Amino acid sequence: MQLVDIGANLTHSSFQHDLAAVLDRAAAHGVTQLVVTGASRDGSPQALALARAHPGRLFATAGVHPHHADEYDADCDGLLRELVAAPEVRAVGETGLDYHRDLSPRPTQQFAFERQLQIALDCGKPLFLHQRDAHDDFMAILRPVRDRLAAVVVHCFTGTREELFDYLDLDCHIGITGWICDERRGTHLREIVGNVPLSRLMIETDSPYLLPRNLKPMPSHRRNEPMFLAHICAEVARDRGEAMATTAAGTTATARAFFGL
Ligand SMILES: [Zn+2]
Image (tube, rainbow, N blue to C red; front, side, top):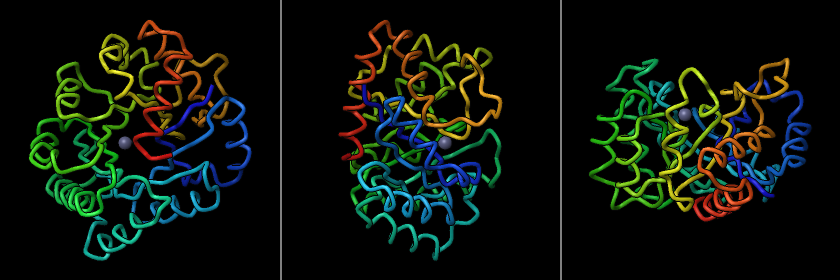
């Protein structure tokens, strides 16, 4: 079994002291390739550096998360344009809208999202998108340009059935995290994940965030890491009513095609 973690925040400080061990454990659990999320002005060059240090195993995205949208100025736009030209960078983003925490003003988030859509249009690389509690505005910005974009993934999908079908209708891919294991807020995902064709489905940990809440035993440190992707894959397979090997092979093939791994 080989798995691809399409969203790992390996530039996070919690991985600084033991990244080699984290990657070894991931490999021991079948996670052979990972896409390191670039989510800020400082983090995106670091994601590229990690990908360069682990060729063929780590890849990167380059973008500015809506939480950091107020970093987005002309210099930042120029930096992202340089980064996305690197062969190790396989997608533009993480970008999108997050009205749940509203850590940046909404007009600022919309501006940064639109600028990064333009980068994707210009470079022709796929998009790695984040949406939380902002579906209508997100669709209003994405829909008019969708036809001119390459592949698009809505990562860490946590929305409703209606939102899921909106994204599938727009020919978007869907990223599923350990959110699906959350008995407080993820159970609706278990009922709808079977509606995503394997050719549109990818899995991710969003490490070090979103530690699956039903791991047994629970790690004492509470840090999520890519090795737990195998657990997420098993949960998704159960919810879809298919063999884990089917989910693993399907999501891996989809991720490899999407990111060109
Ligand atoms: Zn996200």
